[in-house]
Image 1 (cartoon, rainbow, N blue to C red):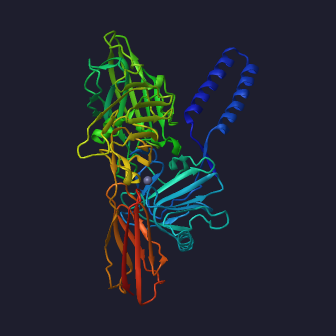
Image 2 (cartoon, rainbow, N blue to C red; image 1 turned 45 degrees about the vertical axis):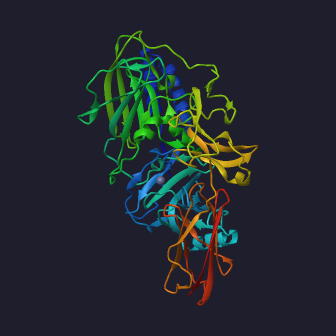
Image 3 (tube, rainbow, N blue to C red; image 1 turned 135 degrees about the horizontal axis):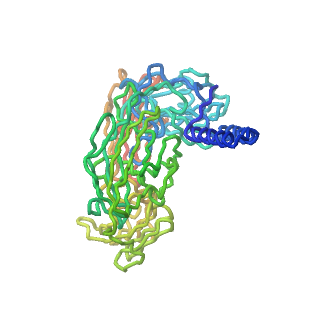
Length: 604
Ligand SMILES: [Zn+2]
């Protein structure tokens, strides 16, 4: 096994230091000192080398048989998360054979209508786990095992953790077939390499998969941000987008922005590997201020617990407004992403002189192809506004929230309780309430703005306006723009509805007394299904969402797979239904406990 060290820059510096020592030793004509120092240095280098993270090279084979084309790479910016693997193209169709990338054993199999869909993990003896997601299905042996577990648990969703020895695999064994299950938006194979003990996702390219890239990343957007009340760009306190000009493969701008106070920079960039025309993510971004590194990020590892910090990393308001993904090259106080290295002053630059300063931004892909954006800004003394966040509650729904502490706000009919560290920075809490048209349960509660991101769930409680006893358990809080997205676990308690919420914006109490809708797709009462391979049923819910479903034939539970993207349930006739008359039944229940039942006689 070849080991590759990925800290070549540190090595380069060490060699520089050795050259310096040798020079000093010889300058002093003291060879003994020189050799002693050199010896000590070589020992420290060896120690340094072995203390680095080393990634096995040529250990893993490709999970597919054809050339790897990437529809997505590691660390690219996705909605509410960083992408933690490679999206391998499967020719726009499902059913491509998927192979074990090395010897090991199947250590986890998960079936879910969401996220990874049908997925499988293999544990290898070298300290890593390979993960295969959005699968259509598994090889025959695993498929049988999964189906048995689904029938035993009477559930489509299962998570199975086979022991070592149950499903051993050899490098190159067929394990599964590619698909489009879970939150996949088109057929592909999602592939990850995780650390076995920590389950932290590593950039698979570190393991030398057969991916090549000779093209440089493309930088296509520059934004300059006044970071706080002290910052100004060209005399204004709002951020400024600046047009980038491509010149000889590198980039510049046509103006010299005037900056003063605390300033941050942001860029938009993409990279495409060979064989791919997808706009995938860049591997590293570096910002130099007057030739000194001021900010650096590198996409080597991302723990799943850190992935949601993406909403602090990017320009979140811009993402909501225009869908643009801007890497902000400065870091908020509570952004704990580990991808940043050598960040000075959280990446924020204070301009307070009348001099010109050079900014260099380098975007690299994994293979070292580099694009450089170079420009000058002019500093300015003085006229920056001095201000700071209000630190006191003003009695009118405004309060200062310290992001490191728990923050609470309470009024007569509203309560919010944010645990410590769910905000990325300090802020002035703003709240108001207005009457809601056609809503007898509560007014509309305006909680900050929806473009302020929150890292995790917090408690929100809204008082119910009128006596609504008969339907207490049907009440829930909804976000007026997004419904129940980012709202969960609502309970009625002491005339209030209390829920876990993960966004800001406008909220009100709603009621869900409407049961789910069941629409038979290819079955009806007394139909002869002899020639059909499956039963398909459309299901939907108006508000709170589908919580459970269960279906039987002649009273025996049957496995119906759920595909939320198509709002469809499928049952595949597998030979267990004998010719003759049968009764099919389905029961679907939503989050608020409203149930719809469907029954049909069919013939086989
Ligand atoms: Zn993916």
